[in-house]
Image 1 (tube, rainbow, N blue to C red):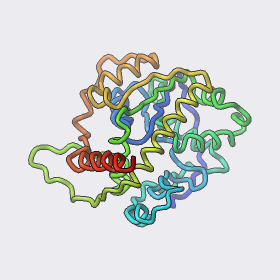
Image 2: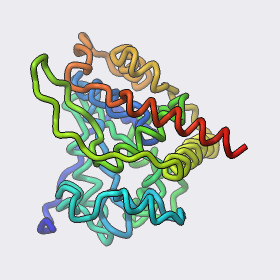
Image 3: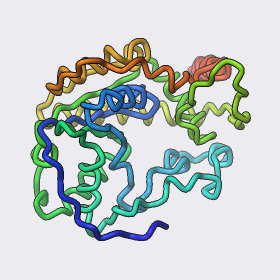
Image 4: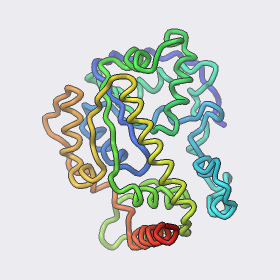
Length: 289
């Protein structure tokens, strides 16, 4: 585990902030990489994904808490197979979360004073609890805490209309631990094939989880009286530049020239295997009725 550091970072001057609120496999990575490439929209990454109990991001098996299916668990990678990127960050501490929060503000803020971050509901409640451990945020309600922590805060909410394909994509990613594919030039050799096995129970469980997490985001926005900028996976995938332009406009930031499409650095992971799993799942649902 990385050695802890105790360097006190000075928070940058922030004029505008935004949180990209999403569920896994909804197009948030493509949107955030497009925003990052503008150079004026902060650096929206997952700075707060560590769970409060472990200090590391959620592991594949933790997506299936409550599912009594040894077969599904058997298909997931063992802890030893996961890369070391999911170790605790040096700045992270449950007892002194202020240091990690300050490091995130520094990392996520561009020179024009714009901060951006991505948030998944799966760890958002843990983030709020950890933030309340910082004395100046203790006892604050959710909305007050976030507005105090992130000046000029705006919310961006991403949804994916086709939840079955979203669940299929998530199940594949959890088995292979590959969350994005870099685009390859013509003639490049494809990467080694990673084992992925269809499971009705796994996809069904993830589908329910994604729906519940998206409903939780909607309930959260209603509870704090906020109307986020709503974007859909389908429009982000179709025109990431236009989606990024909408975010910049909502945040109040002007970019003279939006970057070229991020399709050059990412490729779609959906393929014939994914489509066959979608059809198998829909057929399985029909048989259960």
